[in-house]
Image (tube, rainbow, N blue to C red; front, side):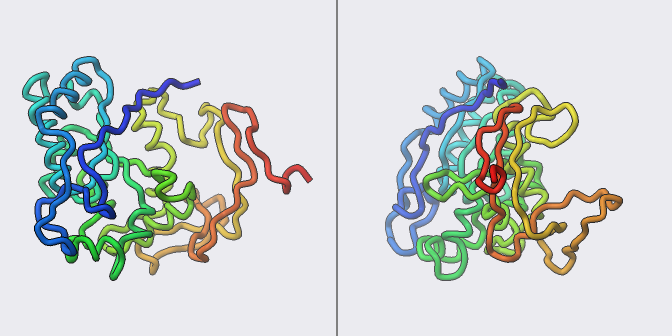
Length: 281
């Protein structure tokens, strides 16, 4: 059984919905209010430095842009105390990171900080007229910059933050394909890897085969009932269907129907832990 090195989730700020995420400018629907910071730069830096010195992961919840800058300033301070290499080697993690500009992306990549993002947040609250636009106005367009994380070399993994959003991984993959900002859409393959292999890597798993269906990998997998397989990319003009194994192109369930594949079976390290009635009949 693998032993992971995942950190917890210390709150630097709050959420957009409750107007407690720390912002650098006022909430659009609450003039004079910029949210809350629960941890100072020095407090966060002390935690990061201590974790880095021991080679263990630190983890923080951060949503607002001011909250993120507080976290990244803390990484700068910690690096000045224990060295940038130690900070990078500890593979720290930030949850959510919904508001990141170019400078933030550069610092995330510099310290090899994993962003643990939730695509369903954009699907639920992103886009015209929805919660993020109500709270932030034009700033909401730049939220959850998934494509920018990949293009700037920021490590990314995806999840649900359940029960905040439901445990529906294929809906989450679809949310990456249908991001409210077309410039931030990513392929189904990238989203799938973000939900599988990347999670193990975020947890500092040393076995490079974890989270993959390849010879030699632990037999932990799910079996899904799907209607159709296809190669899906962010630009729907170049998607294609194929079941020809000679193409050697990884295929995933078609997600354009709005319905999710049904899980038929789950196996953990060779032991079945769930089987649907369809398989049992």
